[in-house]
Image 1 (cartoon, rainbow, N blue to C red):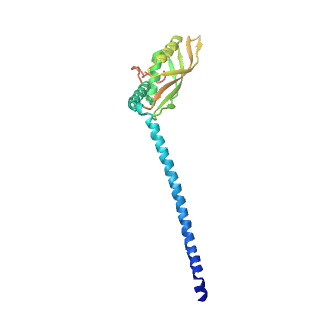
Image 2: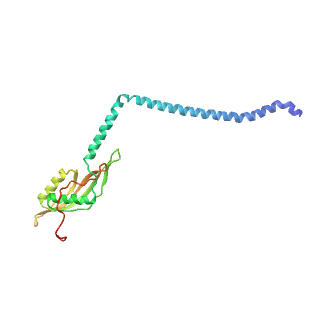
Image 3: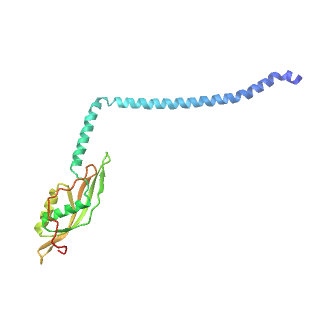
Length: 205
């Protein structure tokens, strides 16, 4: 007891230190957290202010944005209107039969699948359907076919063409690889083709 009475002040000081040190460390950590939060908030404020300053520089052109968007949409619509949608198989047959009628010969082909060529910013794409047509016709018929493809409303491009002349039969034979361009933006419609005779008197002809 005499020891405690003699050194009670020192003992109290030790107890106070033991209690205050954790409190001090906790307060210091909290202060550091507050400093970090303050720095992050100030950085965010600076970023927002920089954005406001940038936008203020465009104040003079804000009124021109909507008309420009409308002009862009109209331009895109005109582009889409130049390309029909992909052909279903039955209409691929109709189209090839029509080409046979145009050049007065016989064509054979395999069905084509639409393949995207380029995708635009609105998600629609311009695609293509590529055919290899094996033909048998006269030389004049071959020229008529090429002339028609050059003016086809479907927008077609001839990629490869071969032409051989069979003198004994006076016919031209070969193949033409062409691409019909399409778009996913338009609803399907049958191809433009005149009515023509598709039936035969006998299946062996």
